[in-house]
Amino acid sequence: MSGVLSSKKTLIGSIAAALAIICGLLVYGILVTPARQPYRDAQAQFQNVDNALGRTNISLNASEATDEEFAQGITAVRAAFVSLEKENEALGDESVLKEGEGKALYDAYNEDLKRFIAYNTNVIDSMEKLQPVLRKCSTEMQTVKANAEGAAVVRACAVEMQAVSDAPDEDYAQLATAFAAKYDELATILDQMAVIADTNSAEYAALSTQREAVLEDFSTASSTFTKNVQQRRTAVLATDSAKALHDYLEAKSRVF
Image 1 (cartoon, rainbow, N blue to C red):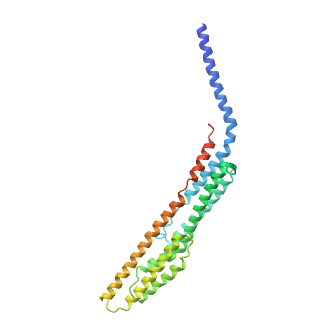
Image 2 (image 1 turned 90 degrees about the vertical axis):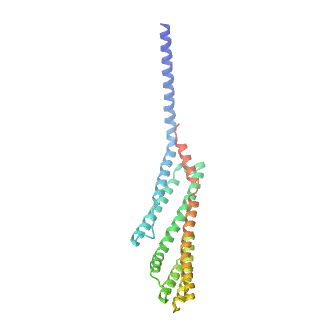
């Protein structure tokens, strides 16, 4: 009988201990969860910012899109960046990010995000500025001939391209400047070819070679532009501030 009683006492003691632990955890949760809620709110808003950031990834295919499609794409991406800025402002209003470590982490993230937005805004403005001229001149170049009329068309492109070389983005500005110089050089070659009667002459052949070299320079300038844009975009995106803020909010949001 004493063995049975002893066993029951042990069982009752174990149950009591388990209940005490559960009650302790419940009390801890009741006391701690409200303190964690502001961090959870900030974490949820951080996710809203991340979602808005994803919506800015809109492809603007300037070479293949129609003018209407390109204009619609520009409008959509501008709206996406406006939304991103609003979501980020809301994140900055979260109470846990207004002082101490939270503020320091948000300030670093905010600075990086603003740099990213500024860079992309300049790119969008530059694309919108250059696209009509690039499309027009690219189309005209397909039918240009080695005569005075052809030289005039190419020289007009040089003037138009130079006029948009003040694009706010450095890479787009450099592309416009390079293209303007090459159009001008090509126009000069076409003018010289136009006055040569014998198209089989060595002089005409030499000018034809120069023309092909200039046309190749356009491809080189385009490749350099693409490489520079990719490098600059990678540099703008390469930050640890987003991960640092995410990890901080996640850790502070945990109850246990």
